[in-house]
Length: 614
Image 1 (tube, helix red, strand yellow):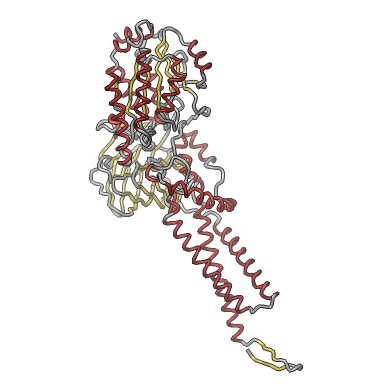
Image 2 (cartoon, rainbow, N blue to C red):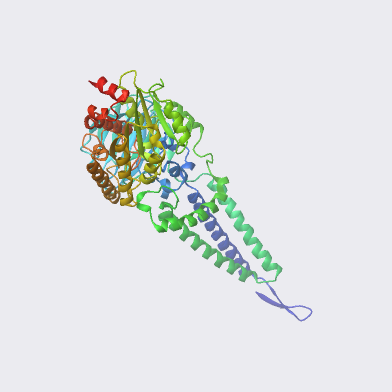
């Protein structure tokens, strides 16, 4: 600066060219830092708001089921499925099936994938309402790589092993091309297989996994003419420019306010600028640290008071829900910049549901009894009734003397979570199979008394208090999973009380060892087996038939006969049908027809089912 003496002999200063250059540098640095902060802040907001809901081209097919299994809603609403801006198929209990909501003719599919040890990826294509095809790329020896054709329930109609595919650690680029009825599979730069393929004009494509870590990213789809149908990075980039300038404008207003305040209070502009730069620097560092922490750690965690995956049950998880609630609540203020706010209900999803001929039916009444009667002509129909004593007595009075009554006691697996259709749960599939075993003039009545999220103590006490008023001939008890982390002695006592009660009334009891997926966490399997042993011990003590549904579904001929599981405990439609077949065989084999007669020698229905089979 140049010093001058004015007429009052006071020293004044005037800026030099160097001063102007310094100020320009100051403001340029402030401007650059503002841009950097706006960029990082935009990334934080976009990433914090990233969930499958923001990618309306995709939907978890669990949500399309009539009986939606646990974790399905959370998988679409939370960030776990797209943490690190990629599709994590193993999130929320695994076994997810993510479908594209667009119906089109496939020409070529490209994507990157990482399949960890003991995991596998299923590429779904040619999916219609009746059937679909799939390629399974596997690092799990129990589920080897294969070309699969399946029906709408997930049961395999054909399975061709692909032995020459080796999937290694790390990321792989996959290309799937359909041309002239031939399917080409390319991994990296190498074509590893060619097979004959259906020619399907309108179809759905998607991805599925088991329980193991399976990740998909950078999906590009083309039709047969090479026209790009979709390019998906699973990054939440919608309206990022608008959000960036919004944040930048807010920063500019704040900086302008600070300079105006400094001018008003006659503070040094240079010092004020320096302070602003320091504040910007610290803010940028803190925001960057938060983004890195969120990207690599926080967004993968399960901070929810709900049915989170088995491996994340901990005290820390319960405490962290408050922190997560604050975080999500804060970023909900930026919902205006979201791409999609209507919670996976879109025109494309509506078209998808119509294309796949899906029907959900009316909502369920939680805790109600589900009753199916063979006198009702609609095979899929059942009705729900409350479980109060007055209703039960009124319902019992409507049962004809010539009837055979079966009651199921269980939790969500028995209730039917995972069934694609209303009435598709294995209790009612068993009803349909048993109907063929009784005479035409005998009414078969099946009562599903299962309650989701319950346990043996509650369910059996409910039966002893009032459900027995329906006077079942056979009670099928499918339990263990929800009790496996509770008091084993209480579990045992509940089973004993049930059996003793039934034996005094000549009601037949069948124990079914509740099944878990063979891919389930080892600790859960170990706990489950302890409770299976308790059921078997009680059955042996009282002479009750006990059948092992768990071992059956994991047996060599069954476990890979189709897609059986939606998570570690809930069955697909194919799983429901397989469980019903097993229970039907067990009833015919283990509960001999003379034994059925002992349910009540005076019961006409019992005698007629015996005579019908003879």
